[in-house]
Image (cartoon, rainbow, N blue to C red; front, side, top):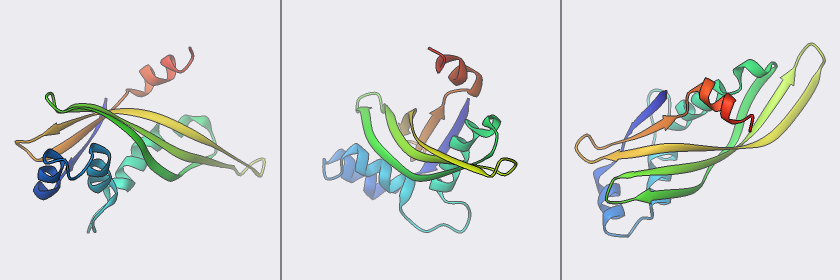
Length: 133
């Protein structure tokens, strides 16, 4: 399984604990805010989502990535993040383009000791088999 580990700001976590930030707002801060010298968390997330579509042919592009909803168990520090994104393809040989909206559910854990949020993505083979039903 692929994982994405991201640091969070302690003041954001305290705001979550105090009810000043919702879990969705907290995760949006972790994923989509800030400036980075290296690859941004959003770009890392897009790379992991693209892996789900790499064997479908064409040149896939993920855009309009959003965190739609979040389920969170505060006592356990675990939850599910529901993402949606636009998946676009260009098929060079046939000069065709296509696009569709995709929704993904990703499990996450907030670890207070390391000040990290870990997103766990379903294994590609498990995901493709589950999508058949």
